[in-house]
Length: 252
Image (cartoon, rainbow, N blue to C red):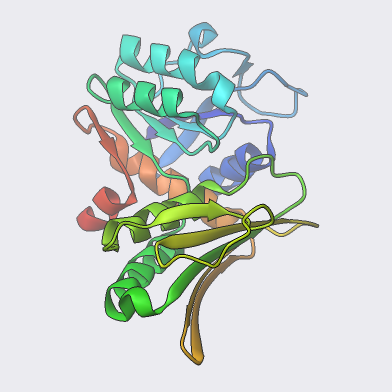
């Protein structure tokens, strides 16, 4: 039985993870990490990883970028792998993650949905076929409580498309301050925040007299929770390295 720690356990995703893990027979939650604790959990909750008395097999983090340093310190000191599902990391923090992955197994993805991985693959294929005759726009929609914009998933999509582009493309975030015609090297990035939208990502290819739209819609956070638990199970026992969804899917 794999013992899992949930960092950010009091949040919406943390509680969804608790529910998802409860339905499985191959893993269990041994404790949680959160600065908030309303006493509703059947396991201990600590306000920092350094205070944990349990010895977990893996940590799943859905907390806040501010928690990163403490988690990485704990992981490297104990050899505990972490699934980093939090978004909004700075470039400096991403560098810390890469450095830490030389000493402990880390799994990082801005989106844990298998459907999103398929969207990325299809978008890359479309970009390769359509070439520079089609302009590319990425539109992402989320609930009104989401802080970061654009979403980490939108950036994943954009980076994947940039890898396929020749000449190299660059990102343009909204066009309200851009007073010129669109360049062929642009990928437009647009964020919508409203209501309780769980998550929608669209890649629009706009060409001469026709448009192609590829869209993924998440109707529940459960899809991200299930993907995170699968990533945690994949990560147990892995050698130090920075893993992502492509590594997990290649082993499936």
